[in-house]
Amino acid sequence: MTTLKTIEELETLYGAPSKASLVKETTVVVPQYRAFIEASPFCTLATSGPEGLDCSPRGDVPGFVRVHDQETLLMPDRKGNNRVDSLKNIIQDPRVGLCFLVPGSTNCLRVNGEAHLSTDPDLKAMFAVDGKEPRSVIVIKTRAVYFQCGRAIIRSHLWDKEAQVDPSTLPSAGEILASLTDNQVGGAEYDAEWGDRASKTLW
Picture 1: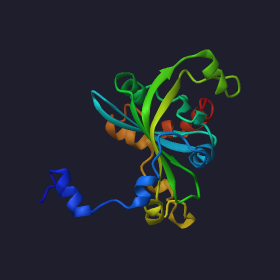
Picture 2: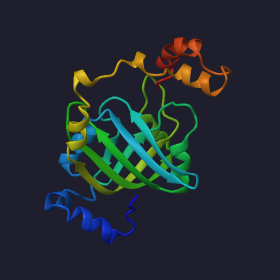
Picture 3: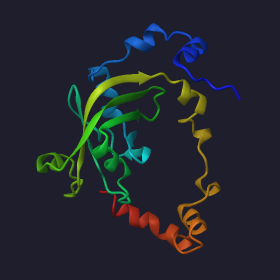
Picture 4: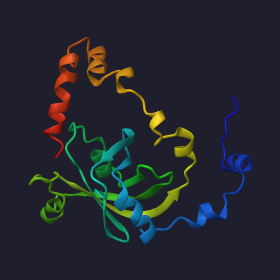
């Protein structure tokens, strides 16, 4: 196997980036990029810490990540499984990367920046749903913001109805847990109860 070991080898293989791929990058959220963030119900959050890397899915109603100002984004940390891998990483290493998806759009938006966690009462109150506040808010200072061209989404047919996979053809969470724990955790009962449990703990 031939391995690329230097930046020079990589640049020789791939060539120079196009002008469009360079001029699209800004350090702040311009109005055109704000439109993507406000339309997006889903993004991934990449973090880095002493134990390695993490990439976490984040989803809510469109615009759940709020543009506080041109260089500040606010993301509520909704209920989950309390592993808090991303939050542990942010405390130890503030560097983050986000990729926003908008259903139906072939473009996505990438944001790199530095983050910290806030428990400010006013910030948490901004994101309350049915009187329930997030336990913390991720405050992100932008360092690079740019759109990603649609080739990956086009190749994957991500939004095509015909490309949707029947969930019953995949292992369920209960089946995975049961397999990993010799049936001590998970199983059919876990799957049967999960939908109702999740619907009651979204916020």
